[in-house]
Each structure stands twice: as structure tokens, then as C-alpha cells.
Image (cartoon, rainbow, N blue to C red; front, side, top):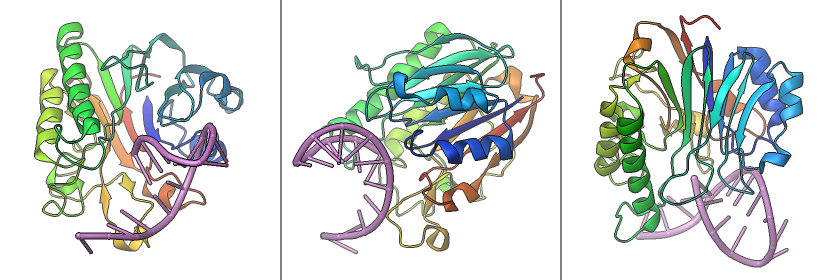
Length: 264
DNA sequence: ATGGTTGGGGTCCAA
């Protein structure tokens, strides 16, 4: 089974690009974030026509929104709310005996101080709530995947300059530490770093604001795929597909793919 | 230190 995750930054605007990706990469499951549409306007028919009829969508108007589309049957779809908000940042379902959790973690605004910036406070609370939820409701022995735009680049070489980004939201020690607790809670394995050494630069996002994103290459690895220990020995490959950042009208994120030795 | 770009919805907010 191959699972992909992609922050698409409007699924309606980029539906043709996504369909091209599905033809090109042919994942069994695609998890999307920032679909930026209410459920009624989600392009479900286009995905069905492309061979992905099994779908779980949690959208809202204009902001956020997550979805899972699959070639193979998807059961037990459910979405959870966090921090007392109904802002469409989580959806989960079971595919081929694996429970997949798809997250869009709050970006956290600009100021890395929860007392001055309520968006950063929200991000930290969100991380604490999901950590507590998994420790209460799930076990590390259960085969699960956790994917999505987690809006944190935890390792030194998950950003273009560790020193320059220490005070930049997405790479501050406070949120990296929070993310570490989340990961350690169920002994989640970083499926991409499983294949790529920690001292090698790895990015999944490049700002729209850079003059030449490719040349400057000031990226961050904000998009992640984690698996619980029973799936660790089943990991076969992982890939971050950088070329999608260079297409016409690209998302600022690129897809991340992980292949598992699990029959689809 | 500053400003740079994009998307959605509606004349600004979030990233």
C-alpha cells in the first residue's frame, strides 16, 4: 500500500494537478490538507472518475479542511474537533487494516510567544490535546499512520538554516519539544527519516514569497508521515516529490509518499 | 529590519 499526503492549498483550484499526480504516482490513498472548501463543493466525482471512489471529507468554507480519497475501501471515517473549535483539521479512516489519521495543525502565526500571540497558543494547545487523545484512546501496538501538514520542521536539517529559524514559528524549540512529546507518546516512527539520514537536508514546503524558490531553496519539512511500531518493519520506501513545486499554479507544499508492505 | 506571494471571499484574513 502506498499512502500520499499533500497540502494542496485549495483542492478546487488545483484539481487538475491533483488528478495528474494520481495518474503519475498512483498512490492507493491520498490525504489532503487545506482543501479550502465546504463538503458540498468537494470535487468528489472527479476523484471517483479517476479511480478513487472511497472518500472521507471534513471541509469548511474558505479555510483549512482535510480529506482522504482512496482506491481501496475506506471504513470507519471520523473527524475530531480540537481546542473547542470546529475548524476541520482532522479526519481519520481505516484502509487495509491500517487506521490513518490526517491532520492539519494550526500554523501558529508569526510571534513565537503564546502570551503575545493567540495563534501560537492555539498551536501549542492543539499539540497537547492530540498528544493526550492518542495516549488515552490508542495504543502503540495498533497499526496506524499519522500524516499531514504538521506545520513543524523538527530536525536541524528539516530547515534551510537551523540558526536563522530558531525564532521562526515552525522551528522554535518550544513547538519542536511539544511535537516530540506527541511522537514519543505512541513511539511513532518518522517514516521519511527512516530512509533519509538526519544530516541530509529535506524539505516539503517552499514559501511563495521567495523570488526563486528553487535556486534559493529556503525550504522546510512541514509535512510528515508517521507509523506506529508494528508498521516500522513494513516500511518499503518514502519520497518527497519536489517537482510538484515547479508546476504551473503550484501549491507551496509538495506531496510526501510512503510505501508499506501491506496488501492494498 | 523589512517585505516579499498566494487563495478565498468579498473590499481583508490566513498562511
